[in-house]
Length: 213
Image 1 (tube, rainbow, N blue to C red):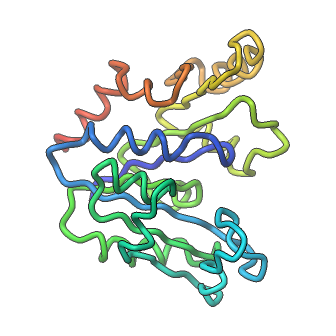
Image 2: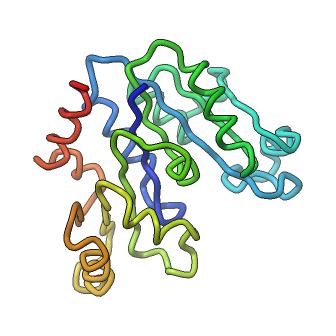
């Protein structure tokens, strides 16, 4: 199965936004999508869900895959946006760290006969070698809130997408220069909105190469 991983430095790094604009570029082939949420302490509730969500508390110390359409297609959720973007099926894996690999093995069976899957996850990027790997950064998020996996994934990813949002480039130029230095200028995309990254020729070339494998 072909895979594209979208990981990010933090929450609000526009991972889902990027995944959602990648999916239409992969048509007419059938692609699924996966959202992976890793929770380290199920007693504390889901790191993404709101008050009373309770989904992560149902994991029971291992992992759980959510596939029911009522949950998956809820408007304004990450999985709902992936579904609206044309992914079929869309699955949500909630897992504790030791069960990421086992959960992924189960996901592959449940995805069925699709061409591939766009996967929103940092953790899985350490478990598999994807066909294409994007890493997103919201420069307005303080470094103190970055995930511990960020430095390694910045170096490993095919593309690092720095989405300026409302920030001025000169305000975050030091960060841009740092990322360029770490990657020797390779695959660093600075854009006003993460959605624009998929139309760049170098990204299109990688997507086309993946589609013919």
